[in-house]
Amino acid sequence: MAEDYVLEMHGITKHYFGNRVLNDVTLRVKPGEIHGLVGENGAGKSTLMNILFGMPVIHSTGGFQGEIKYCGNQVIFNSPRQALESGIGMVHQEFMLIPGFTVAENIKLNREPLKDSFLTKAFGQRMKKLDWLRIRSDSRAALDTVGLGIDEMLPVVGLPVGYMQFIEIAREVDKEGVRLLVFDEPTALLTETESEQLLSAIKRIAATGVAVIFISHRLDEVLSICENVTVMRDGEVVTSVGTPDPTTTIERIAELMVGRKVERPEYAKRTQEPSDEDTILNIENLEVDMPGEEVHGITLSVRRGEILGIGGLAGQGKIGISNGIMGLFPAQGLVTKDGSEIPLNDPGHAYQQKLAFLSEDRKVVGLILDRPIEYNVTVVATLVKSMFQKTFGARSRGIEIRDKKSAWNFTMQMIRELDIRCTGPGQIVRRLSGGNQQKVCIARALALEPEILLVSEPTRGIDVGAKERILDLLVSLNREKGMTIILTSSELAELRKVCDRIAVIYGGNLVDILSPDDSNARFGLTMSGRRAEAQ
Image (cartoon, rainbow, N blue to C red; front, side, top):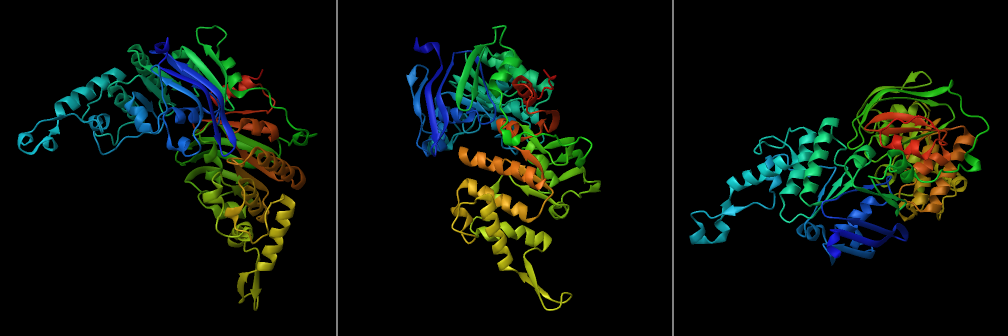
């Protein structure tokens, strides 16, 4: 029967600008069921939920193929408001509370109960006033349901992070007619005790008949509360398994998430590994205050001439490491190159020590989109190393001006060596493809003549063919120029293809350093924050 399921999504397929991100995905959730949805970053979980909620990005990019049934009726939500009004709620990892409001005001926001005032009869319904007794009683009931015993009239500002997550859940519980709740990484910011309390609250909610989709990278939590688990990889459903099945273990799910073993291409294999005795960069107790990517005291050594991968799930701190070393976000700790300290919080010092950085945000941080290729390639080297300049007059008293000829010639050399597809050094960067824009970023780094190249998410937002060319280029820089590379990426398969070692970050901490040849299960467990023994 149709009512056997609160939600049925059949054959969901989605393309973004010609790239298929979901392929024939099916998901079914019963009333009162807690259904786990797991997968690596980029597996398609967020896109699937965006389709369910009718997010504008889905409809503005051509919609989707497939069928959604909610409470037995075929639906397509054209906006998140429609989904919410139909009884679908979501608890986000990022809090959506108003700090200056009380707990009760946040819970009842936009659904405030009203009552008549002494002016209602004379001036009509617009003179009704807030029913504070009901606001408080409804909020108290919702807080009791989630097990949070705080005063509902406390202001949200200053409350612990864990309390805010419970308030988010209480707000969804308080809504009338809720049939389905989606929890997106609800325990990511919680302590172990708070996580246990939240999981208990989710079980109580499901016991009332509300269906729950539980999205989490903490696989032990998924198995502890979910009846069924759907595993996604590369935009497809790998399998759906029941947790009562004794073969459904953390190791099995981790291996399914990561997928088949990635074979390293011949060009990435070495006859001799970089020596553990020859360290070029030492990172000791590094802390970085990068919003959403905080780092909490990481210690790590980088071998001269290696490609060191830094991997981990979104928001776990991997991106913060390079940004902290390069001084783009407040950092503390000790970073030394060949024994010499690199002062933190000052990008100029890092550049002077022959470090260069490719930011994960090439369009905002990495490039000046409305300037020519030549300017983008050479401007940083000019500013921090006084390169591509010439002096008029005596050297001691002369005036330095930009040497357009040397800048142009160097850019032409980079265009040839990196195969940047363009009309010439004068072409505006905005008009290049994503892959060619990334090559301009690499050319800018090479202009600094670095010994260490820090590269963050180099293949984000570019097509498959361009991804391979960028990876090939990084390997050739490492092998042919002897450049040490620190490669940060959300794409585990990418790291396993080209890196000598892979440091996995979780919760702002270093979990382990793995070989690219380690098992899928070990990688999956480590990515979820658990140190796994070699197999």
